[in-house]
Length: 294
Ligand code: GUN
Image (cartoon, rainbow, N blue to C red; front, side, top):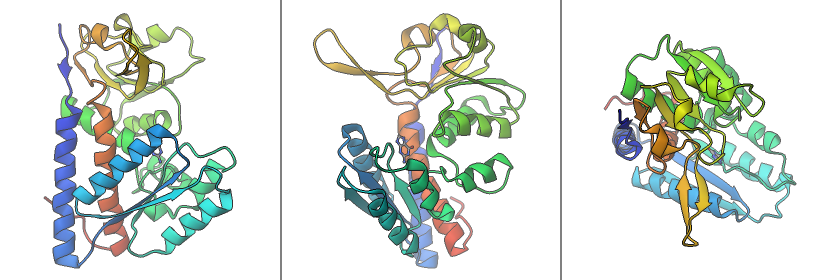
């Protein structure tokens, strides 16, 4: 069997188009232009690419985009000053501080300072808690993108066995929480899990978010399972260049799985699309207007 390839690029284009149409309606009917601010501290090359892409996508959707760059020597107080200014700015509805932050800046303190209503990353503990108990919350973009792709592929998720490999605050934990909210039976596996291949083989839905290139092999996958690969790992090729691979060995997995996200072109594009969707949601909630149906 060869798996269906889940086209994150095409799906994300639909999500972005929807956000763009909603922005048009908000401008026309309410004079409301959603605004997103992205804060980058330091020169991390991968973060620079992400931040540039986020800014571009925000503008393409017709929103206000503000990019704030600080030196990698910036102090925690300087970062907190920027966050506080953005919290108070009525033209900014979403704030994203790109992670990781330099070591002199306490990540938790910065995330905690973001107004939870403007927390389009969904990393504030208020949003984590609200999501966990089923209250309206801002939901982290990458796990949200994974859930949208899973529902599009499988329809109803209720009762399925889901295994999330990885327990990060950015992906693993919120992913597990969202799958639980969809009534999946959820297992979180991690580096200390015993018999990891056996645990993975029980999954109808397998989400890989460990950051280890091609760790999950084809024979760890239940035939017909849906595999969501969150990993983006750059590895050297024989010709001295590099290539991107996921946390799943794609060539093996595609022969066993029912459906699989490729790397690149799977989860990655969905993250930015969901950031735009979250910014629209945040702007509507702050302005007290209904989110436009499109
Ligand atoms: N660094 C890697 N992924 C993310 C993300 O989703 N949000 C932020 N803020 N930083 C990241």
